[in-house]
Every structure is written in C-alpha cells, then in structure tokens.
Amino acid sequence: MASVFPAQTCSVCENESAGKCPRCRNYVCMEHYPRHSHEPCAKHIAQRQEEYVCYICGEAVVPEQWSAAIFAHYIDNFSCAGCGRYVCEEHTRRRSEHIKIAQDTMRSHRYNIVERYCSVCSSVRIFGGLTGAVWWAAGIATVIITGWFLYHG
Image 1 (cartoon, helix red, strand yellow):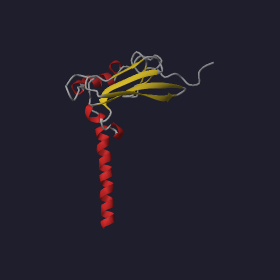
Image 2 (tube, helix red, strand yellow):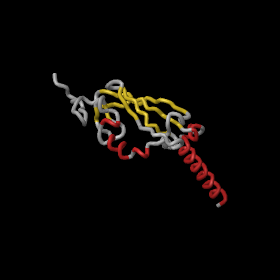
Image 3 (spheres, helix red, strand yellow):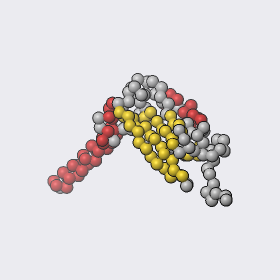
Image 4 (cartoon, helix red, strand yellow):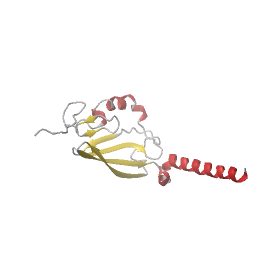
C-alpha cells in the first residue's frame, strides 16, 4: 500500500530527509545535515568566517550541527545564550543541553541544543543573560517612573 504522506527528500541529494536545518529550514539527509555540507549554510559560513571568533580571545569558532540518527540531531552554535556573542570552549563559563522535540509530518525529531553562557552572562542567566537583565531593568525603571508620575501628577 502506498504511503499517504510522502517522505521529504534532501534538498541536496534527493535521499530521504533526516529533518530540517534549523538555520536555513531546508530538508537535508544525515550526510548533509552539518552546516558546512549544504547550501546556503556552507556559503554563509564561508563568507562570514571572520565573524566566527570568540569575543574574549579571538580564537576561531565554527557553529556545528550533526545527526546521530535520522531522528536525533545535535546543535552547538558556540554563541552565548545571554548576549549572542560567539564564545569558545575555554571561555564558556556555563554549558547546558536542552532537548527540543519537533513534529515533522508523521514523525518527530529530537534536537539536542547546547546552550552556553560567557562569564558576564553566567551570573545573570536567570534573567536571560546580559541582554535579558538590561530588558528587566528597563521594564522595572519604566514601571517605577510611570508610578511616580501617576502618584505626583
């Protein structure tokens, strides 16, 4: 009996897809899942190679992703989850791994996402890192100033 839901095919080689690339959203097989193995991600990495450096020491870092199975994918962007800047393994203060389950037609995929924090964002990670802490401070200041004007106005 023919399948009602056709299997997605790889955008590079037309083999059965192992899932979508989280960056370009193209369907890719296990062989082409790494960013440097399919377009447009390979072109993006090659063109912006000078941007992928640790902001502390200047060591080159390359965002990685790979598949262990047709349903299990690993993603490590080498960027701080708090400020978004690239950080090398040596200057990563805190590292954790989160699992995201994504539905894709009749099957699901497990994405193991590595979350890194630099030394600055590690201490304020409960607020979302440095960027999140600034947003929280701005929000609290806005509420206080608005309250002051309403009370004194």
